Length: 443
Image (tube, rainbow, N blue to C red; front, side, top):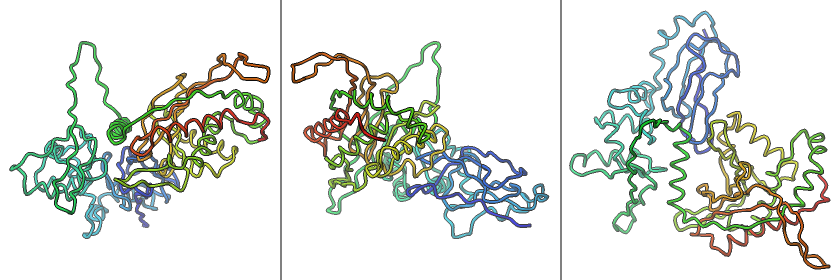
């Protein structure tokens, strides 16, 4: 009887673990090659895990809600379809990884489901290793919530919890009811450590008829990311109004022919992306990130586009090297990413590596917006709805009033590194590229 391990795949360059959110197949179910076995979630995106083998699912090594490290076996699939009934018991000793592993399957499940270590109600992320240490030391979830984390997004690391244990009971842990920034590392010169400011949650009272709706996992991530971004970056927003009549008339003229030839619908988004990519090449210092006191100037122009999901949440897939694509290539990329976002088919790589973000608030009928920067980027552009308006035009015969297609552009930028001159000039350049669009341009 051939047995195969289904391994938790690598879900992106910076993703080391994933949470099992749903088992699509149960023990004893037959599985075909490439058929979905389970659904997982990372801090980047939700994904489906297909089977690389055909056979029967004879053993699940983890439960729904468990956090599993990349490269760990998550299920056993047998190619012997008659072995389904007896295999789970026979395979029990094989469910634990080698002794050298620090993330064995059984301890992870025990920690996740222990009576006083139920992490399902916690909004903070804890690695399996931290959970194991907490259980061994008798640290409850409530106590763990009070430990200041120095990891990414304020996560509690192995070092944090091990440093906390010796002083446990003798000093009060830093309250992190709502963490918005990790504390700065202690300088090598011995100076006092700077701790992050703490923001306490407001008290909320319930009134008759109120309904309590728990945030889903993605909404919690978005909420934390937005609060963090507003705290990290001093936001400034600039606005311009652009006359995009040529762009509108050109699209109206070619959209039927374009769809017939390319099999793709021409929307305004690829036209916006093209203008932004051109402006970034003119003003490369808006295509940067901030790392402490260092500015990282990005070589690639990777433009993220905010896409609405059926759940009402937003996700930002990324068009890589947008400046190197022609309009047909941009259109195909935009449509592909948008369609896969709506179908929940994006991969982790599809939403990584963005250097600038575009959000179209005009798609909801809004004339303008003040978007929040998508960290670690330093600028985000919002495009408003396009409306016909009377406008004054300068002609050789004098000024005239004409009906034009107008729209507002708003740019939020990080005032630590993008001042008003750079931000305003960049925004104006985007508008110039839109206004000077060639109405006779071939496609």
